[in-house]
Structure formats: C-alpha cells, structure tokens
Length: 313
Image 1 (cartoon, one colour):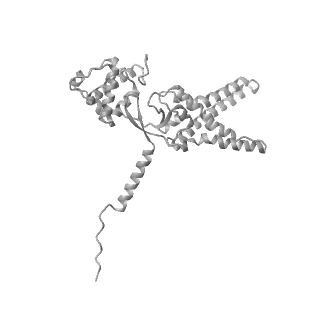
Image 2 (tube, helix red, strand yellow):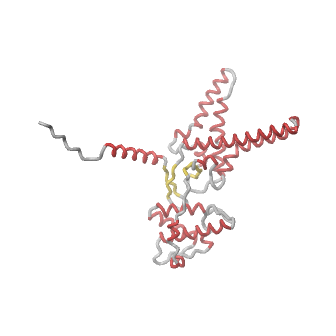
Image 3 (tube, helix red, strand yellow):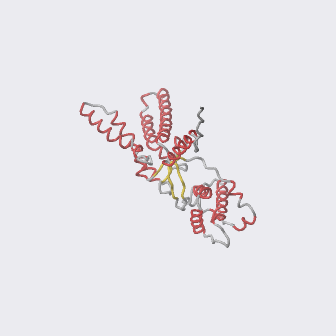
C-alpha cells in the first residue's frame, strides 16, 4: 500500500523566512546608527551616524590631499633651490615649514567651520559634522574637536616611533598603550564618537543631498492661497537655508503634533496672526514656498543666508 504524502504545513516558506530575518537584521543594524535630533525650531529629525569605516575613509582621503599638497610644495622648493642656489634658501625653507604647520593643524578647521561643515574627504563620502543639540555648529566646537586630533593620532604615532634604550622602549610601549585609548575611543561608544566629538558636543553624520520638494511649492501657487498667505520680505528673511531644509523634513515626514509645534514657533517669530480656518499644514507649506522664493532671490543678488543667525548680510 502506497503511503500518501502529508500535506504541506501552513506558514511561510524557508526562503521567505530567511529574507524576513535578513530584512529585520538590516533594520536593526541601521537603527543602531540612527539618532533623533530635535532642532531649536522643535522639529525632530532622524539622522544616520557615520560608521567608523566611513570616518576612517574620509580621514585617509584628507591625509592624501595634505600629502599631495606638501609633495607639490617640496617639488617646487627643490626647483627653486636649483635655480637660485641652495645657499639662499633659508627664508624659503622657513616658509615651507610654516606652511606645513598651517596645513597640518588648520586644514580640518578651515573646511569644517565653513558652510558645508565637512572636509573634502567627508564630502566625498557624504558626511558632515553636526551639533548634537540641534543648534548651529560653532567655531568653538570645531576648534575643540580638531585640536584633540593631535592627542588622538599624533601622540600614539610619537610613542610608536620613539627609540632609545630598554627603559625608553618600555616607556614608549606604556605610552603607546595609554594613548591608544584616545585613538580607539570610537570603537567603544555607541555613537562612535572621537574624544574630540565628546568634548565639542558634535556628531559626524551621513548627509545625503536633499532634493527640494516641488509638490510643496505647487500647493500654494493658486491666486487664492497666494493672497491669503502674503508674507512680507522681513517675515521671509527670518530664516535661512538650514531652516528651509528643516521645514522640508517637517513637511515630508513629521507627525501632526510636530507640524503644530513648528507652525506655532514660526508664527511667533515672524509675527503672523492665525486666520480663521487656517490649518498648520497650509501655513507651513505657504511659508516654505515664501522662504524658498526669498532665498532664491537673495542668491541671485549674491547674498547667501545660511541660517537664522546670519544677520546683516
């Protein structure tokens, strides 16, 4: 008698279960690197932290750029010495040493204190420096995080190449072990911060290029809404490019409660009286369009307002 095979058990297939586990694993991995930042405007924005590998890659790119610049300077120095004679190269050599000092110590500060808050290496990998309190990245924070780099990287390298007798070798080894704590600090905290980031109150985050939302602008192009939300240039000048991007994120992915809080803050700051039947969403969409239009007009005149703190430009 032939045995009838048992019917297949109900449920998901093995392949589907594996895909589901892989998807959940990826979500957990991404979630561990995601943080919620609340801006001074009250908007909650989800940010993805840069990994140790990404930060190391950006550092290597920046160091390669520094080495390339210094190599070009040394080549120029050799050609200059050959043309005017090595006996009169003291001033040129002193200038070269000063240039090397400035390049080594102020390269990162120069780029991170600018509008992009990122060195060429960070920009190549889509990274930038951000303040952990959601405010503006200050010069003090940039200086603090970058001056600590000498302790985090320079000090271990000095101990690594330190020579001497047996006692000196043991001192160098102990110094290397002690200073390596600073170098390896990103591996032992969940935010993968350097000691410099901890002191300066900063993060290094993924900063993908944000595209402005044309559908938001299209909702306020009708004459009726245009006359209802007629913002003055002074009201539109209250914020800058940073707040425009924050407002875009609020309109795209925030909850109604967050939209209400942000709308209330903007109304208070620009002195806007809420009209009858005016919704928070309609107000935010209208102000987004007015702010974007005003910033574009200023850009045509060569004026760039990075955020609400830029006054008198």
